[in-house]
Image 1 (cartoon, rainbow, N blue to C red):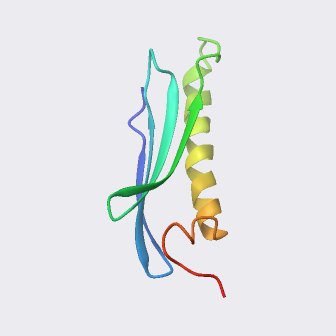
Image 2: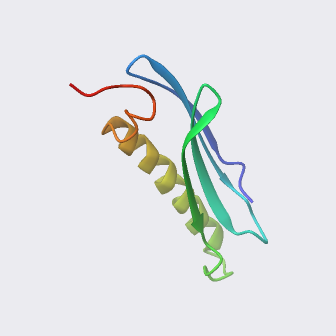
Length: 90
């Protein structure tokens, strides 16, 4: 199990927090949450239970975590959550 990532972000005047963590065995799941004022506005889970239990597993899990965390950041920057966080598009 990895400790995960926690990141505070300022976006269009809003303060958000992204958290990505590995649940470890037996759940074998990476979860990423995007928070605004303590409320979850986006949740993503990826089951990695099918990954082979070999020497490369930990590295692959770390890659999954990074990719999922960056994916939320990318979607945030693209405006995917603007409506959920109270930003109207003009």
